[in-house]
Length: 622
Ligand code: ADP
Ligand code: MG
Image 1 (cartoon, rainbow, N blue to C red):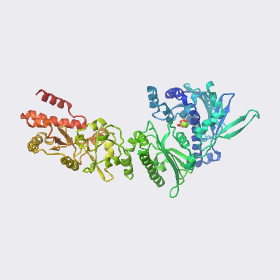
Image 2 (cartoon, rainbow, N blue to C red; image 1 turned 90 degrees about the vertical axis):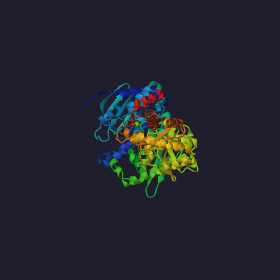
Image 3 (cartoon, rainbow, N blue to C red; image 1 turned 60 degrees about the vertical axis):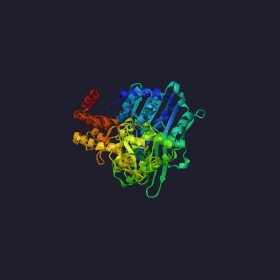
Image 4 (spheres, rainbow, N blue to C red; image 1 turned 45 degrees about the horizontal axis):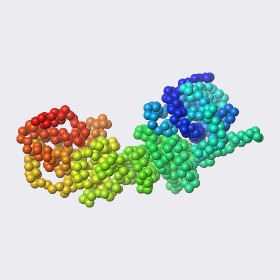
């Protein structure tokens, strides 16, 4: 039998402990919440296990968390009769940080003093918060699966190492004994502890009891501190805003308040309770689609699992909260969750709930909606591709930067856009580009600027892809202005006086250009779309846009080069000048330069930049 063993903490834990103790000091009481939350998780886990294991079922008494204060020894003890830990589990759970990415987070905390230290709670490092107030911590535990009385004791002063040895432990579960630092004696005050628990953990479904010692009578009693009713089972009217907020913090480890929530008791065909929250700040790992997300799943009030991601589509992965179903079997596993028809139904109805909650927010509180959009808009943009059924609701929630807004903030809705369309306009115009700067300075916009027609500016990476899935909104079609388009050509013609003289000369000119460029381009035409720019390239209606081609090649796909339509602005002074160039070599150079310029503006780069530079130099020195 192994006896005492000394272990080093993994180095990231050392750093973490250091940061935690210093940065969370102002909010040190949260260690109570963290330890209680772990205890209640452990009881939930055991309750779930007891459903399927005869042996454990026999031994499972009702879950309870107890708190014991010993003023002489300066200790605060938090115990649970939950699942406990084996020797290996204690090493894995309390000696390393298993979650990938935590290390990066710590590094970013170390390097950037301004990083929000409050984020710490999100990283599953809750247990270590006990070292904020303790000079030594003992963890005495026995796994519920271990039916002998052999337990493990883990001990550390949070200085870089811990020891483990075997003990006798009669009860299954875990006992955490905090040896408080001298200056933290306030946590020996029973009133203080009771208040902290009321504040943070009132609606944990497990009872939390504290030992009240009567000095005179030399006896004591156990007093239950919390309500111990699962918050979500209560009626909405019985729940205070603060209680919803605290409960959110309890289930998410987020230090920030939630932005909004939606709590529903549903009866009839499907019976469930859902409590869905939208956070105020996005978690650091939201962008990784593979990372954990999802709801807590309960079946008839019994906790089944965390991070059940099947209840919401991926594009709503920022939603936190829980679902408590009456229709699912208790022994449901992650595998079964994949293709269960009850789950499909729940997913449809929860998706609607979230979209409704967001729609209501957007209508009733646009300022708050902005906060949401800035945090999660990018994720929501995955929606049209993933969820064709709710495409319209999602489109209605999208926000854009536009030509008229003059800045990169995305605040314009499609409804706003349509309301402000010109009478002769029948499409929603947009442009996609790599950045706001590139989009807003694109020569494609010249005509629109001149005639005060608004254009949506799209410059997030995902935009081009998204626009493949939303082709119309409220009966109006979307049109990329970097593509050839009949409606636009009509609009342009209507708004331009065609100068007969220019047109006569230009036909010859165009012919010459065509013979020079041959199959470098798809077609050569004149345009009245342009004002300050001599030439431009467009993609044909059925051709993939430049932005799309970039996405493909970034994804490592080999795609044939785009053949552009080359358009020339007959009213531009440079074109007029080139028309009069007689030297055929120089003329040729000019035409190639015009094309290269247009390609550069469209793509942001050229296949052969040197050739372009040589051409400019040649023409400048001519
Ligand atoms: P988190 O709760 O986010 O996982 P913590 O640092 O709070 O992170 O806890 C780390 C792990 O230690 C838990 O995931 C759990 O496996 C284990 N643990 C902590 N407290 C207990 C407990 N009272 N009973 C059983 N396991 C526990
Ligand atoms: Mg925890």
